[in-house]
Length: 177
Image 1 (cartoon, rainbow, N blue to C red):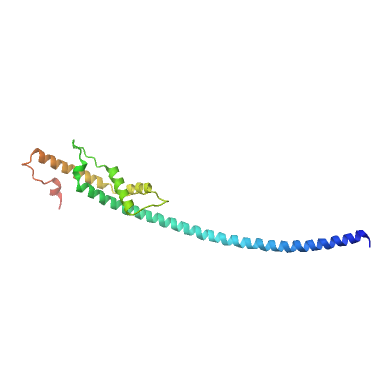
Image 2: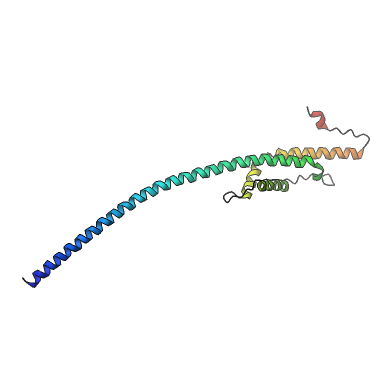
């Protein structure tokens, strides 16, 4: 045999062996690719499920915050009514000017409630909640408070002006009923 023939036979055997090895490696990689694609499909399904849960939790938190803010607005209103009715003289200046201190009292009462409820959230800040409570607050509390304070001041002024003619009845006493 010629040396070129022997060389060709050796090379052919080598190519067959290498092709067999490459085929086996190719089959392994095809299986790995198929497994990876299945895992990606499962991850995509899992991603959809997790995203749905996240959306549901976000909506639940939002619903809870809306309800919390509505309740807090009622509680703040009640607390403000108590503050204004328990010490109306506090809101009248020497010259008769009425200062209900709305912003300060509102912030104070809201903060006290947030502290009472131990509210600490990374999503909705205390400032956000306070602003939203302000939006939901029934502002008639300030109108009623101003009327009450004004009436108390006028009543007090009438007494100081004429202590013997003072009857202690206000116009509201006649309208109630």
